[in-house]
Image (cartoon, rainbow, N blue to C red; front, side, top):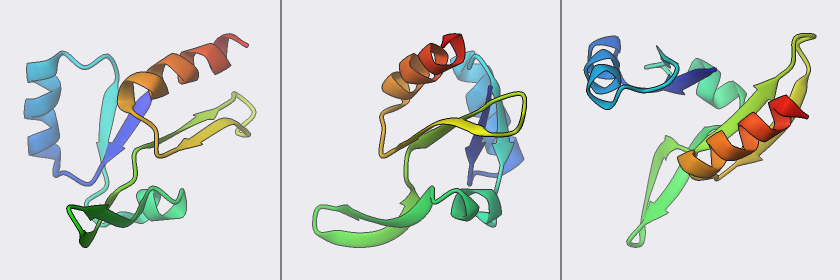
Length: 88
């Protein structure tokens, strides 16, 4: 599994090491991948609108086809559903 974040590599490494994260994180500071997959866009918090990461996941099979897509999903639920879709 891979994660994609808009954070710089150095920040991701510190976080990854601290949290003992179970998979690699890729830095996408310019939001190229995040935008392509629809995971970067408008968000609202306390009435304020801003641009940010829309928590999402995609499970891509060995043939390169998307097996599962979830938008606006919590990280815990994402892992649960992602693993379930891999196991079929």
